[in-house]
Length: 149
Image (tube, rainbow, N blue to C red):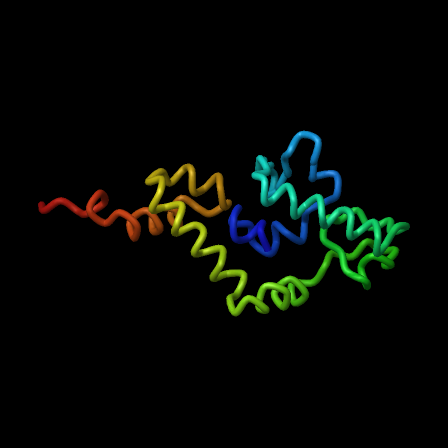
């Protein structure tokens, strides 16, 4: 959940993460988006949560061959290396009373208020230029108001 709330990852990003994408020794996580890679430098909270998850995964499924970072009791024993389902991720986050999409949108919106740079939003969250500009316009209407003709 911290990857959604702090780093604005979406469900597809989360499901694609591999164990090899997480580099605790370098304090970073590589997120694969289409043909690109997005590097997240882990803050203290994210590092602690990732480290705890790795330990918990080794405790629960010590012999799993599934290469994905996020697994559950079914995907851990699946020899086809299935990806965790969106329902599982959504259900976990729904316990907070929010949806994954709402948390992600709030994170992007908060970032737009802090930094009025659409390129920064695009890099952070993997959104399109048009979507980034909508967030910037909503956060800073005075800077993006249309001039009279």
